[in-house]
Image (cartoon, rainbow, N blue to C red; front, side, top):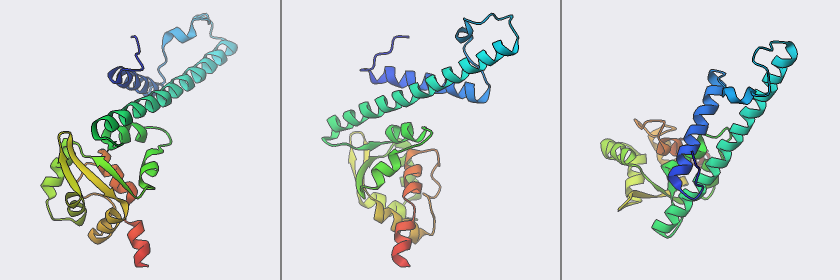
Length: 200
């Protein structure tokens, strides 16, 4: 498959394919047969097996690097897309989850250390917000600092207000929100710690 690094869908598919291949190597120890082409398939000597392991490690590392590079590329393209649409960089679910799937995510801290930034809720996240209504302080914080856009609900995140709301709700995450969503991960990462420190 031809990879067009200027086409966001092409980059998405390449990243998904690479991640699946890395997962197979991690979980099932399945490697493409073509990587062993220089080794006689009937050679089962210790030396040949040692070479196979070396090739597998090298290939696995190459694919892991490709996942990192494709993640960087996709995040960069998503950033530019939101800047074009909103006139500024707005954090999206896809951006955050793309980074979250790395071995060492950097995005949550990169955003939350700013204190104030914007996040675009997905349709499912907005559905959760409507479902819990005013029963929790965290929902009131999101509703009170969001505006409706053509792309969804745009939330002006203030990490201190989020932390205080979690503290007031006596929770460390968004109640009843699927923890696999970007919004849940973002709120959990902010946590109630900042407000708790002020109370101490």
